[in-house]
Image (cartoon, rainbow, N blue to C red; front, top):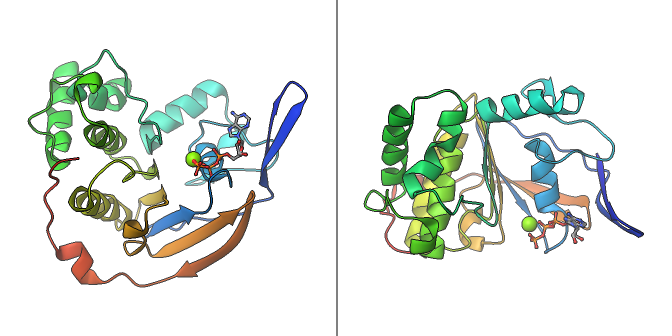
Length: 235
Ligand SMILES: Nc1ncnc2c1ncn2[C@@H]1O[C@H](COP(=O)(O)OP(=O)(O)OP(=O)(O)O)[C@@H](O)[C@H]1O
Ligand SMILES: [Mg+2]
């Protein structure tokens, strides 16, 4: 797969022939220096960006063959995306932001808010349901973004730097949450990170460099890491 960004005369070849396959039941990390193409790659895998050439198959559905509307519908049902810049809607409360994927999938507002409150509780924000993004710290906003990515129980969860704004204990709790999704046999999680604290949670680490896969390694995860309970505290 390749991706070229062009604006006017300038062109950037962000992905230079990448082939990756992500396995269900495991947590895959995507690492590499700034600008190497991580966000570009996961945006294509999540259907928010089209490749310039190549194919993207998600659970057997070929995204590049779908119409815009079909991609939107497919994403709403199957994909959760936690953005590097959070992308929360500024005029909605935490609970309303988290409820968006459910409302899009036809849930009633009341049921969506109730489920959203439960997921916000799981990320340590049970007491901030009615706060606006502007009234929360960066780490709290990040946890709202994570809750929104998880709330509709997507089969593919994609997180771009999900621990960049939180402290160690919250980062640990967030990774346990993401990993519990990844360990289900019919679900997949893909996490972009610069954060070495996250590496131990991964079954597989793929390194990108300059738009190409530079290497990959598999490792086993210490079961104790998944058991140690950390409360999501402050961030
Ligand atoms: N919309 C865009 N228009 C033009 N060039 C872009 C655009 N988005 C990204 N790029 C370029 O594509 C390359 C890959 O960018 P990308 O955002 O995928 O990197 P990244 O690995 O996620 O970096 P970081 O770790 O800093 O988030 C970079 O050279 C970047 O400048
Ligand atoms: Mg990025």
